[in-house]
Length: 275
Image 1 (cartoon, rainbow, N blue to C red):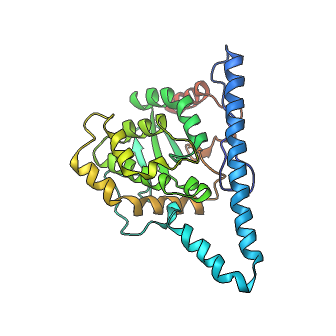
Image 2 (cartoon, rainbow, N blue to C red):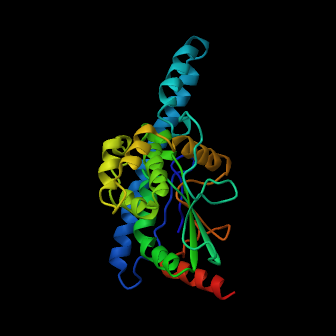
Image 3 (cartoon, rainbow, N blue to C red):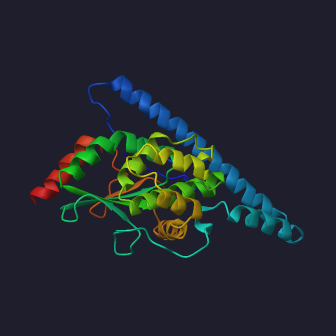
């Protein structure tokens, strides 16, 4: 599994693991789909870099215009959210920037840096979700989700930040995992900033039992958790990670392991529990 970015100079890569070793045709089709997503993200990165280079080439006379471009896009970058850093309930990690799922006493910890607008993140979730749920429900694995707003910066918009903020509001209600899964199952096209609409985020909350309450709606509409999301994204930027999704098992980056699969992850977690 080679999970890689939408923000670095190198083109994003996501080598889908063996979804089914007995079905090579399905595996090949999945890899072709991921290759197409990689090409789209690479094109977006080239457009963004071309804009930066073009603004720089304007020189002194173009400085004001360049600053205008930066200012106009500042509010669209997930890291540009203003307001207090109000963390959701029951956060984890030494920095308080992780949303934990699973038993605190689990002997294996999986850290997942994700962006709700990231197509490769959706692919990871679609393939690994059943295994991760099985391992967390059995008490063998704890997952620490760390929310990133990388696509907002690459493609423009605020859907990554808004969706992450809504997911943090769902954590307040004790419904993070279910809402997290609903967001990925209903992820819009990468260029479609549908998650920027609070009405859409509230609508999706209706698919999670007990989540669509007045307190949740107020939390989402006010952006109460978006300052915390911006802090999480800043930690990602400082972490020198290759991109999203970045997946760590016990602190070891398993994202670049091309042999990784749900079955292999399960074996690794079970080995950690036996140890």
